[in-house]
Image (cartoon, rainbow, N blue to C red):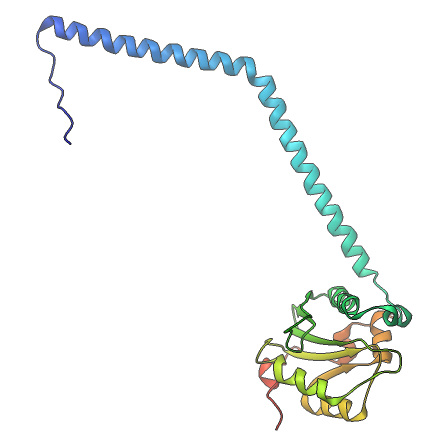
Amino acid sequence: MALPRLRRPRGTAEVVSAAVVVVAVLVLAVRMLVAAAGALAQAWPVLLALVLLVGAVGVWRLRQASARRRREAERVAALQITLVEFDAMDDRYFEHALRDLLVRDGCTARRVGGAGDQAADVIGDHPRLGRIVVQAKHTRVGGKVGSSVMYAVKGTAGPVHKAAHAVVITNGTFTRDAMAWGERHGVHWVDRHRLERWARDGAALHELLGLSAGARAGRFKRAA
């Protein structure tokens, strides 16, 4: 619907009436501005206090978060785990411990173990070495990991997880066939002895295994 067009005032009386309306509107606007300024002038101490309070709470939260991150970084940097402690863990805690050790080594790591993990319990991304996929095998003392685990890890490390390096880690040992097959096909292994050097003595995993920056996910093609 078209808006009605305003006609221009005609005659002195209409001009004067229009001028009076304009002046009245301007006076009302000025009064409203003056009232708002007065209210703001009276309320500014409260507003200032509120702004300062919000700012103080924000700073406190940032400091708390920074302190938590610092404590966690210090804890991980000083992380040492003994074989006795590993043996006392269940599967889940074992995976969390391996994740923390990867973080200590400079990786961004996360635990992904569980149903449907497709032979990856922990995934770590190293800024120089690329993605490291870990299959964790927590066993009873004296338990051995066989070749079938190596086959599974090699089959999924590249195609599924885009890994540059694949590692099977156990608190037990490996069969000779498993170790030999892993070394032939690029699946690294960490047995009880290597685990102690990594977790208790502080050796970095990539140094312990001689991981290089040149590896690519395509190396994990399924063996014939």
